[in-house]
Length: 408
Image (cartoon, rainbow, N blue to C red; front, top):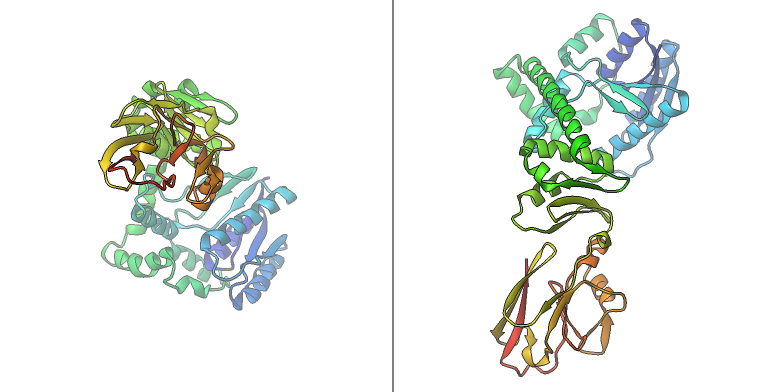
């Protein structure tokens, strides 16, 4: 028989779940997290431990040690990490949580509020750690669970923070859902059924796109490559799904990058993701690369002005204008070169010179995008500008015309 760890907060939902599983003969244990946020948490910890003892099943508890003010997401991450650690240490292969149909209604409303693509509620089963997470109560309403608890004379605790309107979920729970139920009494049941259908549709879509990835994407340890021709044949929803699959595989979100590069009219492009990860488009191929030097940007020589050049994903315009806001023309030795940064590059400032690397640090330019920033250098080897960041200082600005740089 599978060993099941039951997440028990002490609220009516989790108490009903535990009672049901014990009476049905499941091999269960209790896991409880003390969040350390309320005075009542000490009593709740003892209450849940005693409940486990009354059923003669193992109890695993932990107190979180966070400063007040941390986000709900941070507490959730710590809570589920504890559950995963207990499962791994004690050999539980399943985690059971007490999410119910009212929770699912709230989740659907949150998904709609956030304008997410996947409006499908809460999955009733999913992978978790080295096992799985199940939600046996997902298709029952809160009212049904309370009725079960009363009929079986179960005792539970109410979390006072559930009444607060600070968080979006609580606001939806106490302000929106009651009004929905008044005008649409069957809303909980009908949304639950619709979410179940939506999950099935998404599951089929993911399975189809998994087969597409296997057929058309070259998967490597830290990179993937896929021909743009293949990607362009997908619908936007299929591209999103493929992006989600690849994001999960490489643990970096590529969904938006794929869509942006596919829809771009430019032949080449670079999309910065996070850390050292980039999505690139080149030679009709989309690539995920971990460092930009895998995708070198070749120097471009400029012989005459004005001109517009394409440097990676940047469009750089060089024009001649009157005034002092720019690079004095008499300071320039042709031809000009647009290139990326090299070790040891220095730029002339009002007093002496300064390393380009130091300038980028001072300007708070993110480390991961520095390698692809364009420099403008003249024939004498002088760096005239870090395009889009800073122009070199020029003492003699007597020239009536200057070089102006624009970058998109």
